[in-house]
Image (cartoon, rainbow, N blue to C red; front, side, top):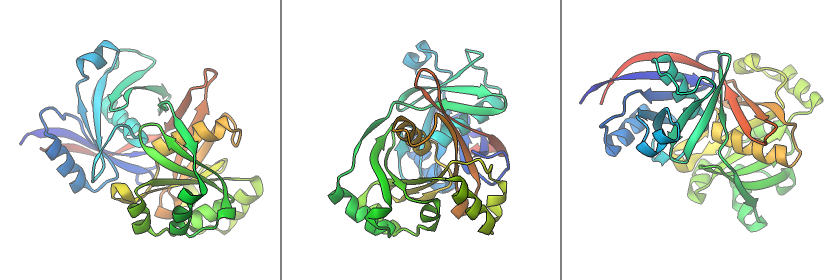
Length: 302
């Protein structure tokens, strides 16, 4: 057992304890797969990461570090809030990227570029594969979510490393009112991302009647309300989800549901107030940005 530098950070918020927490072990060298999984289960956060030197192949292509990402139940090839949170912790611990304009992370999906925009970080969304969802497949999901088919505007399978079934719903109120049967979603074995686009009137009505403390922290130019249900990973609802927001942006911008730059809110129903900044650049690359704050620093024995 070795003492290793450790940080717990909050991602997609500039206000501590209103985003999505992440545990980061800043020296994962010689930690076994079993020990990594056991520690991730013990933290009981949606994700825990371990920072390692890049592989020789990754280093040759410009990787600054390698990260392994664990949920309480399994390892992920990629996830958004662990990407931003790990990068923030690595930089704060003295990490120096090879390039001044970009940090390059190596993970299960390959190399991921991260930009610094002032104090905010943004990662390049991995390529998205998507396909339609047929009615028979959708029926048990709607039953588990307790909604009707007429409340669905569009549905897609979304895969940018993690696989999500994405649903665009009719109104933000519908998204915020969901009380899913999480066991049914777990049995179905698919993570579900739900979203709805704000109109000006819908946003005004929601803000006027909301009594949730977290809502006071949201930037009220938010254009999308998002929730993520990940019972198959042991997380009934994720507070703020980078990979889901990345794939939603790639889908909804491409299909002209949203403009090329917008903000998304997530976490209200869990007492959080996450804000995700999405932008598609001139090359077609989608960038997923957010603030990160450090809440705990110290050592962990592993």
